[in-house]
Amino acid sequence: DVKVTQSSRYLVKRTGEKVFLECVQDMDHENMFWYRQDPGLGLRLIYFSYDVKMKEKGDIPEGYSVSREKKERFSLILESASTNQTSMYLCASSPQVTGEKLLFGSGTQLSVL
Amino acid sequence: GENVEQHPSTLSVQEGDSAVIKCTYSDSASNYFPWYKQELGKGPQLIIDIRSNVGEKKDQRIAVTLNKTAKHFSLHITETQPEDSAVYFCAASKNAGGTSYGKLTFGQGTILTVHP
Image (cartoon, rainbow over all chains, first blue to last red; front, side):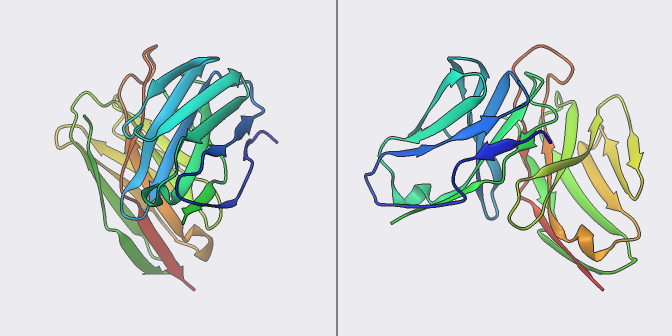
């Protein structure tokens, strides 16, 4: 059963901490995405990657960075966590660079205290 | 950039009734419109999508219609069942079928509750 796996379902961190959110897909997809989900705002794209070591900013990249050292793994990094980064984070992958047919992970609910 | 507005934010229906969720988009160049269903504790799952060269698409109890002139598209669920209860998201993007890097812009989401 193909899937996108996010390492943590719930995460609690302190303001100022460096936070790593990990995502792994087993479908050999070239394209991977990080979204943030907030009530009333839908899903907003933070970063995406269309190849190993390649990355592109999405709509809300400020305060985030990403790493894609291997094809199957795409990490989201919060350099210095802040309370306004408390959110649900969703990783997705797609076989198409256009972002169609996204397959999402179950999400990581991050709380920054 | 693209802006997608989704209505209503909540929708409550009785089992067996139909449910309709509507979205409008701003960028006339958008050509791909998917719908995602998110159940509690899970990530969104693609349930149906449509390209701009098609006006309507059906898959069993769900259908999507697209009006390019008015720049709006809708999800129709017939004979609703309690397991249809979830959050539904519409989205829009351009470059579908092409080779350019694309990204989806999502609507705000609709919480659908189907009462037995």
